[in-house]
Amino acid sequence: ISASNSLPGPEILRFSVVWILCFSPLFFLGYGIATPAKLQTVLVTIQRWVFPTYGKRMVQHEAGHFLIGHLLGLPIRGYSTNAIRNAVEFYPLSDQDVGKERASLLGFRPSRNEQQQEQQSQPELTEN
Image (tube, rainbow, N blue to C red; front, side, top):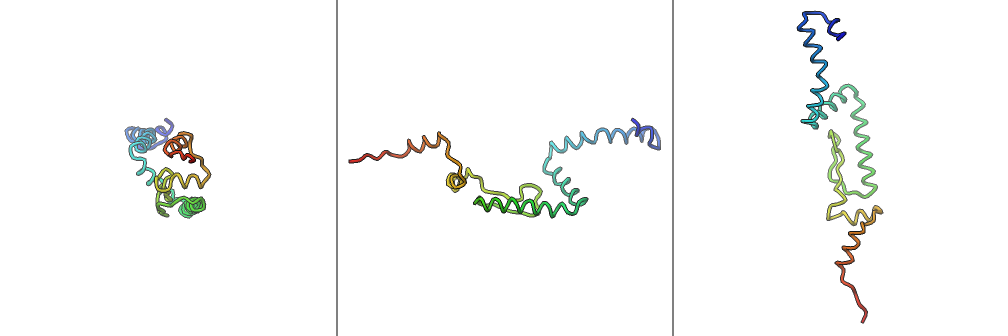
C-alpha cells in the first residue's frame, strides 16, 4: 500500500506495479510446483552468477559425497561436476547384483522375514 502512494506516474501504473509485486510469490510457487527442475536450474544459475565461490563450494561438496561413497565401498553409477542435482549417483543397495552382499559388508543385518525365507529355501541336511 505504501508503494502505491510513493511511486510516480499514473494510478494504473502504480496499481500494476503493486499488483505484480504482491502476486509474484504465488507465481514462483506455482512455477516451482509445475516445473521444479527448471526453477532449481534457474535459481542455481543465478546463485552461481551472484556468488562466484558457490561453484567451487558445490564441486567440493560433491567430491565429499564421492569420497565417502568410495570409502564405504558403494559402487558409483555416475559423477558430474556441472550437475544441478545428484552430481554423484550410486547404485542402490537394493540392486540384485550387489545389494545384499554390499549391505552385509556395511554392517546391515537382513530382516527377520529374509532370514526365514532363506531358512525355508535351504534344504535341511540330515546325518546318515
